[in-house]
Image (tube, rainbow, N blue to C red; front, side):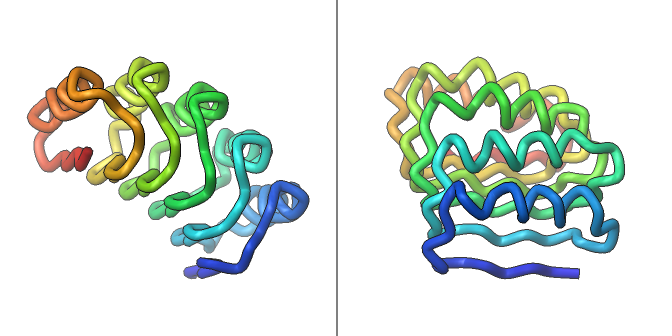
Length: 145
């Protein structure tokens, strides 16, 4: 089941309801929340649900959500043990080099991850290189920075 809520001006105030849906709906595999205003606090609330072993999300789109380094650790921690996530889109946010260690750990530990989109964030050339260096770390893994 797909749930597309792209570009609906959703904010952190609805994140608790979204988290509840993620925790209880075992058939939800594709969640597109791109182009909203969830912000760090909204993603931190979603991260609680993403930690749930019953969460079977395979595609998670969080591009253009005003995300910063403040939520990178929570998101990486929540998704690093996920066994179903295949595609993660975090482009067009405000992640910087401060997020690189958490994102690298996520890429290395989420064994089901096939694609991660990080383009149009605020990484320095060195931060981009560190993330791009993981491209060949696992067969079939695409890292787009």
